[in-house]
Image (cartoon, rainbow, N blue to C red; front, side, top):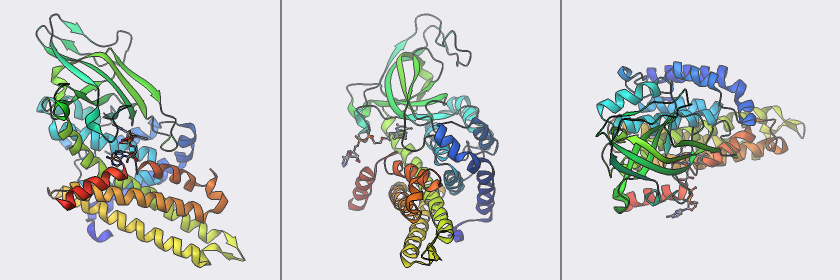
Length: 403
Ligand SMILES: Cc1cc2nc3c(=O)[nH]c(=O)nc-3n(C[C@H](O)[C@H](O)[C@H](O)COP(=O)(O)OP(=O)(O)OC[C@H]3O[C@@H](n4cnc5c(N)ncnc54)[C@H](O)[C@@H]3O)c2cc1C
């Protein structure tokens, strides 16, 4: 598989693998069990550029390509999928849409803090009644003109981002109830999908950049998840939250376009995450198969176990190649939407199957928290659901093949 990688990519892989081994692997079990977001490691990830992987250097980013991005997400996810999720969402569906659709002032205002990890980003599309059907969102942002000077930060919140409104400034009153927000409990910059024109159907959807600390911005309950337990996936509520009109991303009505572009990019990240989980499961399966003795031989001598390892290895390599293909197409400036959807479908289903086989190789011990495969098994499952379910991906792929 390395034939696709340049020397630069190999150096990136070597350094992120080394970092993950030293800094993430030792705490991966503990942060999962304690549902702890490890700021001490996230700060180190930021220092290495992993929170601004593709952001331009002049905006504080590392200026790397998409293939490097997949390598970094794969290696971090192999060590802790929760941290891989944090980095993937932050880079691809929080920073990327601002870079791709934001104006100069928005890029300068929001990207440097995100790309250097000073602030964590989040993407808020899903609502209680709008999951796969994003066009069903009910959140609203209604535009008004200001009539008096106003500051909308929480008076008692020392971390708040103050937003001053001059007379005649335009602003939105945002009401939204967003659920399953990755990074929700720690993020400070949120891309909120809203209806700016409630009667215009899908064409009335827009994206507003909201900042934690604004009056009416509430971080809700943290989800008690099966996997990805170190990521504070939470609900977010905006209640009559006054947000400056300059925080509108692109133009009113472009929300679905922005969302689809962000998810195309995001899917490459989730696919890379799934490959990381699958690779970790494969390595743990091989290690255990060589150590465990049954019927007086290591179980790796039994053909059934060998068959599983052969299938696992083959499926991991196939998924990784598909992820590289989607990333390379994006780097070449070519269409990659179908390929990203195929890579995400393939890699997420591979992660589930491979983690399942790794548990099987471990027998009863694979079902206990003593071995990492139990965590891989739980973490793998969600990759078939978020940023588009497998069923939705099949619809996207079929539509493209049949067009
Ligand atoms: C850990 C985690 C993190 C998440 N992070 C984020 C985030 O950061 N931001 C965000 O906005 N969202 C996030 N989500 C939400 C996630 O993207 C949604 O859960 C996902 O899009 C599916 O939506 P849903 O759960 O409402 O399921 P539903 O849309 O209700 O789907 C239920 C089932 O019906 C199937 N289905 C639905 N429509 C069709 C159809 N037309 N044809 C065939 N089958 C169909 C689905 O495939 C699925 O099997 C996260 C979720 C989790 C669990």
